[in-house]
Image 1 (cartoon, rainbow, N blue to C red):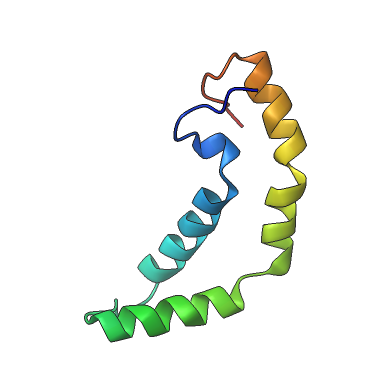
Image 2: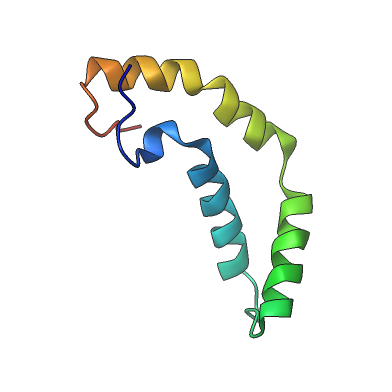
Length: 77
C-alpha cells in the first residue's frame, strides 16, 4: 500500500498529540515557560489512559482498509 503523505488517519501519534493538546488547553493556568510546558506535558502523558493508546493501535487495520477503500482520501468518523 502506498502510504498517503502526512495522513492523520493513519498516524496514531496525531491522536496522542491531540489528546495532550486538549489537556493543556483545559488547564486554568497555561504553561508560560519551556520548563512549565515540559512538566505539564510529562504530567498529562503520565495521566493518559492506556486504553486510549490501545484503541488507536487496535484500530490501525480498520483505518488502513478504509483508507484503501477511499483511495487515500480523508476518512470521516
